[in-house]
Image (cartoon, rainbow, N blue to C red; front, side):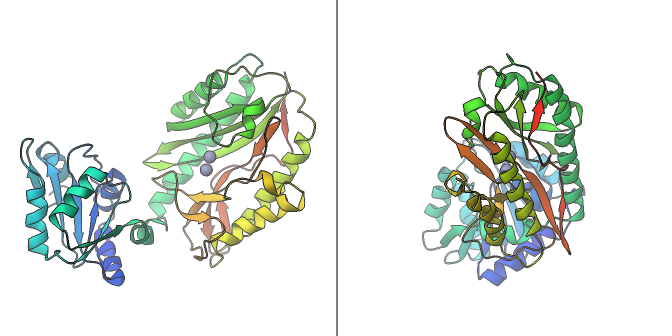
Length: 369
Ligand code: ZN
Ligand code: ZN
């Protein structure tokens, strides 16, 4: 039998989490969940594909016939295939009877398609369905050494893409030109580029600006937020620079955001709640009078997914644990003028944190024009 590429204890650990939560089964349908659990990375797209895990540790994959060979090669023993033209809910019905799920609690992937969930609910009208994120997070939020290694590598590739891009920054380049340089560098460095936001001039005041064809001008503040995948794990880094002489106030705001970034990071250690990290970063920005301009949480968890728990946000009282990975990314956005954000990914260690990105400059870097 082919060996799975992931640790063999993940399905048993999920089963244990189901028992603790009083749930009968987990229905995974997202490629990242199925792959995390078994090493079988495939998306069923519009076809019903469910990796079902019973609280007793049994698991089965309901899958289109065209995916069966791949699944078996990944070490999944119980593959129940259906062909186009057949009704896949018959497989769900048979599994539910066999596993006694008629009135069970069933956790499903948050990303499960509504069409799939609705057909599963049609088969199990008396089962109690709930989002699976919390149960899943119990497994995925603490990264294993192999996962951390991939995340360090992804961080390094992103770090190393920055300097060549900054060296090429010129007035007249478009935001998309800058993004292309960074994506090419990440590709060259061995990463698969996933996203690159380049927000220049007044666009820098929009945290989720859509990179476009605006030409960079001398005097712009430029926010660059980008990441790549290495061995399925993501990086995510933001740096803010000025092209030539920055606009009035930009150096001061940068210093405030950097202080907030350092304070947020400084709060990270095991046992501290996510909201404490947010409060530590936010306090610096509030004290400087920019509280209203920090319009988002301080950070998000990251792994195979770009955004996942734990969130560094008010209201998250869950204590951090060694191996959690998340961003610390305070920002100040002044509409019509400019914005500044600084972001590193950190992982919680026994005595604090390790940064998975290089150190950002403590002062606003001005790229000569
Ligand atoms: Zn980012
Ligand atoms: Zn981020």
